[in-house]
Image (cartoon, rainbow, N blue to C red; front, side, top):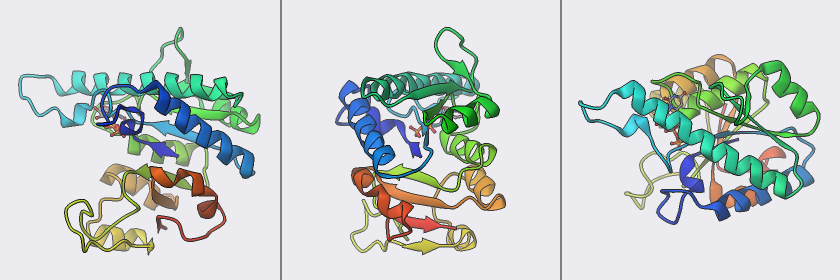
Length: 228
Ligand code: UDP
């Protein structure tokens, strides 16, 4: 599951809300209790800093992206701590080495932790500037061979136009990768999207407000937009 940083922010989606880590951890605990699945979470950092939004010429883009990647680790620590406070075993793994803070990512260890029933939280982006945490979600999904990517957003799925601007925007229930590409629908950024499409990783885009109903998606029932 990919959860953007805004879900961990204050009411305006910025800064850090400790309560939101706990709220999302509670939902994850419920999902684990109700469904027999292995679950890993890829965390964004947009509530703290988004290097990809820095357009100022005098600020180095690579530095800005590292600031963004470090933001995701702050969120990762918050979610790991919140999960463990609810007795949900969790393990934060970063793409950027920082031994005193958390473990570095290794595919083998991540799979071992998942097999032990832990929720693995992936942070630190891909460890490279010029990418996004959507790309991390796609990359980890391929590496650890996930069956499904669940992308949380603040709208109900993929629309033909921005539902926040147009009241007649149409929500798609199902799309093929080809349709999404042809219609230039913004499911994920193009690098992430290409990885999912090339490796046949289905994506469900859903509203974070409906996270409690995620069992529907896992049972194949109508939920958000399925891209496959
Ligand atoms: N980032 C990066 N490389 C990555 C992933 C993220 O450089 O592989 C940086 C980038 O600056 C991005 C920020 O980290 O803006 C936070 O990630 P993202 O914008 O994807 O977070 P979200 O919008 O999902 O909260």
